[in-house]
Image (tube, rainbow, N blue to C red; front, side):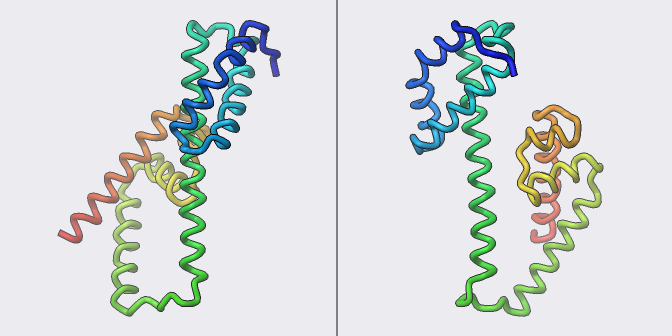
Length: 171
C-alpha cells in the first residue's frame, strides 16, 4: 500500500471532525461514524500516494465517506433482516402458518421462481446475489465483472420484473 503524503494527511486531520459529523448524520451513530471515517481514510490514502491525480481531494474524501457510510448502512440492514428471519424461525410462541398461508407462500415462491427464470442471466444473478446472499453492489459488480452502477441497474431491473409479476398475479 502506498504512503499518503503530508498534504493528504493534513487535509484529513484538518477535516476529520467535519467528516465524522457528516458520516454521523448519515448513520445516526457517532461511534459508527468514527469507524466509517477511519475506513474511508484508509481507502482514500490507499488510492494513490497522497491522493495524487484527484482534482478535488476534499470533495473526493467526502464522497468516499458517504459511500462507506451507505455501505455500512446496507450491511447493517442486511444483518438486521437476517436476525429478524432467525428470530421468526426460532420463536417458540409463533403459531404455525395455516394451510392457506402455506399455499399462498408456495404460490408466491412459484411466481418469483417463474419471474426469475424469465430474466437474462446477469439480471437474475445480480438479484440473487443482492437479495439472497446480501452482497453489496460493489461486491456484485466484482462478481459479475461490471461497474457498481451496472450491478445496481441489473438488480433493480430484476426486482421491478419480479414485483410486476407478483402484482399482476394479485390484481
